[in-house]
Image 1: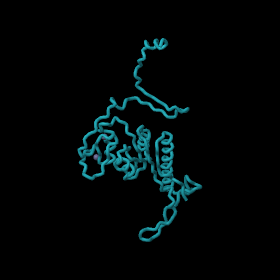
Image 2: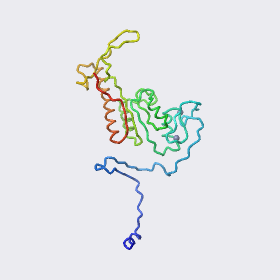
Image 3: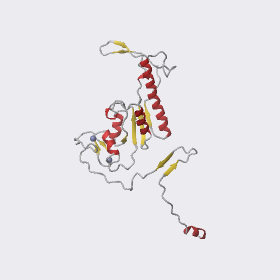
Image 4: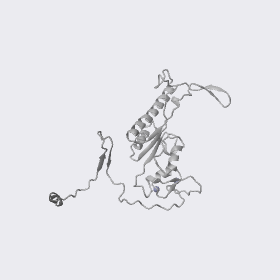
Length: 245
Ligand SMILES: [Zn+2]
Ligand SMILES: [Zn+2]
């Protein structure tokens, strides 16, 4: 008690640090995070809103029985499409300041069914990426496409992802004859790779070389992304581009 009495007179107040950082306890300290602002001024969760049967973002009337996408922060509202659900979460949701782990899909296809299924469960999504999605066109081979992908990969809310690059240059079907509906048999496109030459066969035409390079770049993205996500503990999946023939 006597020893502690000196501390009783000490001023233990310390100024609030505006930057909070932390690392894991492993020898390498491999995982780290820095926060420079509060996500919310108060800890109380804003009250849920009344669902008035309109899309939470575009305000279009929702029909009875229509497929709708609930807000991932459970604010009580629904959206008419995955993209409206995304825009609502980023824009006018009363619970926007609450973190909501998201799912991201690359090479999602024109109708992005996996992203649709995830959004349907009320899970936050990143806009699905694909060249054929008109509303959110993404060209993997352009500079702006690479910047967009980079920003999404580094989004701290990204919690799971799926990557399904084009696999036609890896296909086992190449080189085999194709039977058309009319019964006519035609020769399919010739193989571009083999087990011995996975990065490409010699003597390909200019067009085939372009296809090959693009297929390899997309496959590489998938491998790099899966490695990066696994080191960050993010579950990921994707089409495995196995070398065939
Ligand atoms: Zn809408
Ligand atoms: Zn909401």
